[in-house]
Length: 433
Image (tube, rainbow, N blue to C red; front, top):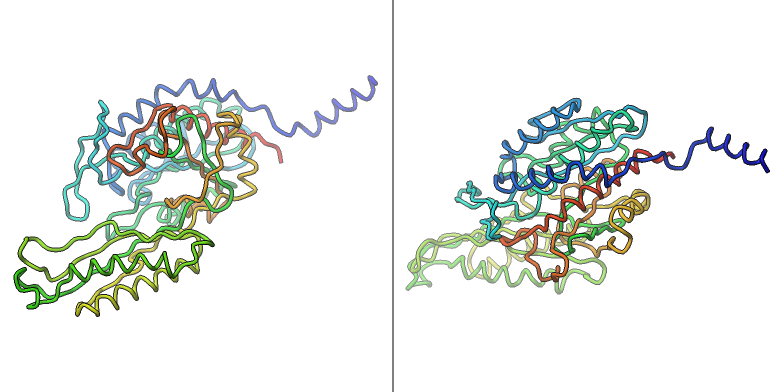
């Protein structure tokens, strides 16, 4: 028996354990919790729109340099920041991404650190708010970077930190976001084995984490339809061609693209109009009306069919009113479907359960929201998960949603997000294949 034990011990020493000993995540996270909260509040109070995140990027870059990280790059895809942490031991390469941009939303949260910022968006003066929680994502990743840097000497592998601008889309006429980060070579000199990201989410309660293997978030495309009529006095509509009536008919008929032309028993489809702009005075029928909106799909064939159907509806309905249209469907290159690599998901799921408890890890339905994290996950295996933002005990399905001026983040989400991402990263880096 003694000889058998000696042989077993020798074999273990030669082969190593299935997992190398990872540091205590709770202890590591506790050292940065207060800083993460302070960073998040500061960034929330000073939000910046996509490709304009100069203050936020400067804060991030200064922090990463202070940590002694290598290859700190700024100005990537206009305002992005990347840096590399090289552990003291050999191991895998991974990337972790956070987005930094805010939205053209006037805040109504009532927080003591609420945003009072304004900016210009599509030619209009707008309020600016972190109504989607990217302030939390940035603060969490700054904390994760500090926690991992503190154990650099014993850390196996390397970590690329990606702080990305313009996830919500760059300003009209500009390039930006994840696709532009990749075009500018962030994976050229550092090709990770896996890329990770998270998003705070109003439909989960604080303390919960959501995931889904395979397709998670929809492809997202924008469209722009300009309906051209002929201006006339409001008292003499027969003297012109009314683009407002034509636009209203286009909007109504477009709903049948989903309800009558797409097989939504297969996969869901959404066509939504987000803005209607036309006219200036109560008694003038204008020359034209602009319609903008979004299309969400999970299947490429369905995606292309919706493009064709929407353009056809716009042209034919406008013609029925004597109007014409310029229909750009889509008007820019959209985001592909966000897919969680099934093998990576299976590998990471135990880490999430370890971080928050198995009963707090929720399998999600397909989500019609979109994420340009999908571009990274198309390059290397990716895993993207949700962190609950709505206070425990409150009905998360009735809470103000992401993008609402009342969107509220329970700061427990900062603690959960920091611990979950640390656990995911450390388990992956310490695992022996």
